[in-house]
Amino acid sequence: MEVFSRNTQGHMKFKDFERVQKQLAFEYPDLDVVAESMLITDNRQEDCPIVFCNDLFERMTMYPKECVLGVNCRFLQGPLTDKVVVQRIRAAVDEGRALTVEILNYRRDGVPFWNIFTLLPVHKKGKKSGKAEFFLAIQKDVSVLKALGKDVSEWSVPEVGMWLETKGLGHCVARFQRAGIDGQRLAVLEADDLRHAEIRLASDRKRVLEAVRDDFDEELHYKHGLSPDRRGKLRELEANAQIAKELNESNVCHEFWGELDLGVYSGRQTVKCYHAQRTPVVLMLEQVDAVGAFKKQLRSHLGRKYVPHVMCGRDKVPLRSDDQLREAYKAAQDCTLCVYLGPPKSSGLNKDVGGILSCIQHPVLVVDAFGLVSHANDAAQEFCIARDMVDTPVERWVPIENPRSTAAIIHQLAGQQLQLNVSRTDDTEELCDIHVHLYTPGVAVVSFSPASRGDVIAI
Image 1: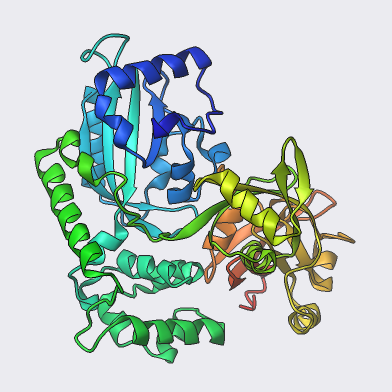
Image 2 (image 1 turned 90 degrees about the horizontal axis):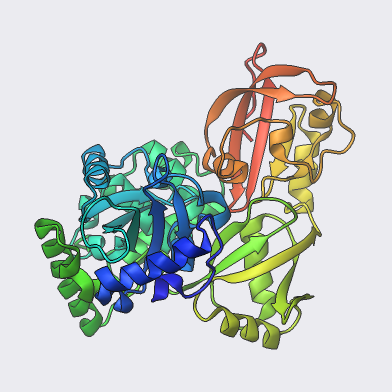
């Protein structure tokens, strides 16, 4: 079964892993046709933590396994997740029964997605009833399905965010959501509206407006560019999914599992980046043939120029040729491509921007996708009493509480102003007003000033 195809590391003991595999085949023989995001939770432990997840879960949520094993999966919920649906899931867990629902979830980078979620109880060996020892959860991103047949004016705020991600503008989603831009507002969007939504880069504003013009016809229908056959298949799958939700029977929609890639990430390659001891970063990149284009994507999403390495046998070797890249894709077999990064080669900022930040009198930190400081101006180093802050974790100076990744949360805070204690090397702290701005998808600029002054600058 796909759920056990590879990457089985986690908190599940081998004897439990083997037993659950056999029990799943006994209770749910049709699962061999399912190729979707899957995870297993241990109902014998408090709070039913995740003990296994497959590569497709990382692809759908962008949460690396290292972040999610051992915790409850409620981290996928967000501000607009339907609490009634959440209660239905909790009731099914408490009662040990199967359930299929549609729920709004959120990826690690804050991008929302529509999820057809199926929960299956796994009982004791040879049993099909009684107390569930484990649960198998299957998820399918159906964000594209939800947009079919709808005018853009009918889109909710989360659905506008899903569309932004399909245009490579996922880093703008959090600010669109805070501004409450739904389909009606998107249809009449102008440059000034984007400025008010804290979309500061002119290039991003231009891309958003061009995408609106290119993707919607005069009657405000979303132009998918789908063939008639594919559109017809999507309609059929939509009907199957609706039947499954209405009847609450997981087996009704087996035809719908694994049929088509219906998510906001359709057509992209999952790339998992490791660097030092930092939390891995999962990216969705366009699958390109040239190693130079691949490295360019890495730099854009990570915020700095890192030297990528891939596995060759048991060794990690620098990624230098197009042939190596093709072999790496082949080895990944449409699952996660793991990339190991050496020391960074740049700050992620061009010289002009770096010069401007250095001249600002307020403390400014530039943070990459791993949550490492890639640039600190003189004011920041003076405030923190630190000679060299580059390559230090941002949480060393700005303590942001997030067990699944400081880097993820600092980038989601773009456009917000908050108050936190900023640390110094002499073990003192001072309450500061902090403003976070997203310069590129992988570069967050953090400016701060003592709260007593009340004059923090939004970069």
